[in-house]
Image 1 (cartoon, rainbow, N blue to C red):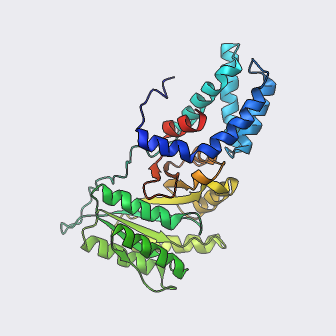
Image 2: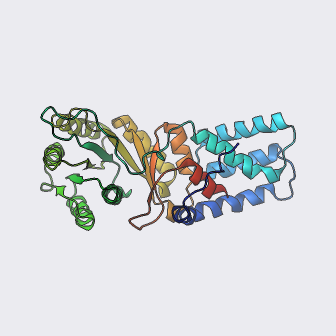
Image 3: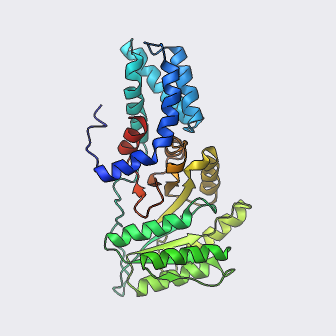
Length: 325
């Protein structure tokens, strides 16, 4: 397989390598113990590898898929040495991730929308961002706004997380930092009203992209579903097919809890893409592999540092190369 013949941009790759350092070190400490004294990939090695992948937060179902693929390789090749196991593992996980479209094609660009309004005004690309409080949702929105603006796109933010005053203020800090307009109302206002105003303003300003923040409460899934559905309906009064993307932000450092959040939100609303944050501060980077595989929703972005440039477009080949090299 030629998965890893691609030449990666050095600066971005160095940031990714550094961001995944804890995950890689944790994995290979266990991996090296598992194959110590072994020359052949046998049942004991595979059993140990299965345990390592599960404890690295890859998830049980995804781990079983990986182990099955390696078992097939062992059966086909008759004899595989432990020295080849890392290479095989990289190839099989990259192959697994290839079955779910990832975000490397986006490059922080926005698709051209064909359905311009009848009056000739530009149709903005509407991105609705969801996720529980504390996962890095506001920071992700700010970094996205920065990246889009850097590409020459005109960005408008909408502060529709009106449940917490801090959420509005935090988003305002990012709007000021990136120097993009933000539409806001008072705490406790109707989130759908804020979204409506943001889209109306975005259309008037001829924005290329409008990013709508939403509340991150999971205490009642029905209420969450109703609120997000209402926000969507109201936005569609301004831009008929909005939102064009519903991005779920997950905290990679929470490991299996990120799986649970993904289950909750995908049950409450249609999620079309994922961002996994805080991978630099954790040894749980394997969660990206499991979430991408289990939910069949493309991981578009990963957070590998606190810097404004450290939200990266997820590239499955770069990720696997950094994790397993």
